[in-house]
Image 1 (tube, rainbow, N blue to C red):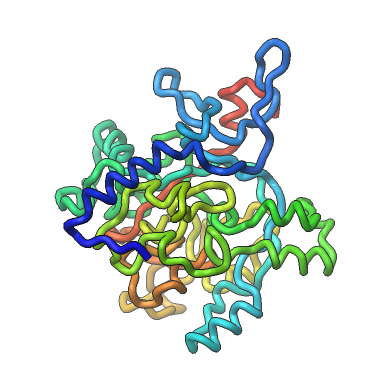
Image 2 (cartoon, one colour):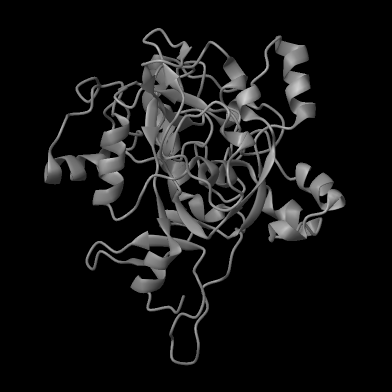
Amino acid sequence: MNKHSYKDYPTWLFGGLLSLLLIACGGQQPGNQSLANGNGTLTQLPKLIRKDQVTGKFVPATRKDAEMVLVPAGTFLMGTSKTTSNRIATGYAMNFWDEMPQHKVNLRDFYIDKYEVTNEAYNKFYKDRGGTMPRFWKDPKFNHPRQPIVGISWDDADAYARWAGKRLPTEAEWEKAACWDWERAEELGVPKEPDAWNEDMLKNAVKCVQLYPWGNGMLENKLNFKRVYDRPSIVGFYGPGPNDGSSPYKAQDMAGNASEWVSDLYDIGYYSKSTVDNPSKTSVGSRFTPDGRITYAGGAEHRIHRGGMWNEWRMKELDVRSARRLHALPNTRSPGIGFRCVVDVTKVQQDLNLEP
């Protein structure tokens, strides 16, 4: 593991910027290619997009300038299996039963930000709309333009997403983008339609769920956590190269760095009752006392944030697993919580004049 001291910080900043320049070296991604007919008209969804700064519309992108990646529609397995849960219980004497049961979820196509929203991007929103200044912006540990924005509430994140013509991902969308090994699912013939899954397909699907964005082994050189750098690293630092921590869809920093607000309310038993198609928990979540205990009278609802954070020590590698369900009061302004956005393909189809 390559550790850097505070004095080395400018060096790894440079390395992170260099990794952004080398982004074109990344591997192939899922989804339809951006094709054109004889008249040059796009006929299928591009797998990489960016927002044109002149027109404000989404346009196809290269691997070098991509801002969002396509997560194609289909079914995946969400949550933690009994086998994995028992392994955690044996090794750590704890059981995250709110991640169970592992269950089928069928999602529509969507695009997700390749990187966490940065200070630079959030500053444009703040100058345009005002609001509450992020809590740590005056601290040099947190205000580099390419670091993820932190110290913002769930409402701040939601407001930014709407301003940008996007939205916060659902909990299910975030998890699929983080851990579903689509290549292995295709190799094993796992159907994209939930009704086509039988017991054999279910056994194969279990093999396609990764514990971490890059695979099933905890590799500390692929993420920023345990206060290694004493601050969030710039986005893309763990991109293509020997320390690539990208997800199967090439979204980066989905483990560690900033944990990320998602749209859902936290419900401790939601997985046993959620719908198969496009689940989203928007009302009646679990309620908590000020000291964090579940209560059935009074209390306050929490919002979910995913991916673990750079300053997490308490549960170490357990909190940066893709299935881990972290949650906090929506007005929390933590140095470890930021966000990324998604956009529905209908918006992209409209911008590109594609038929639904």
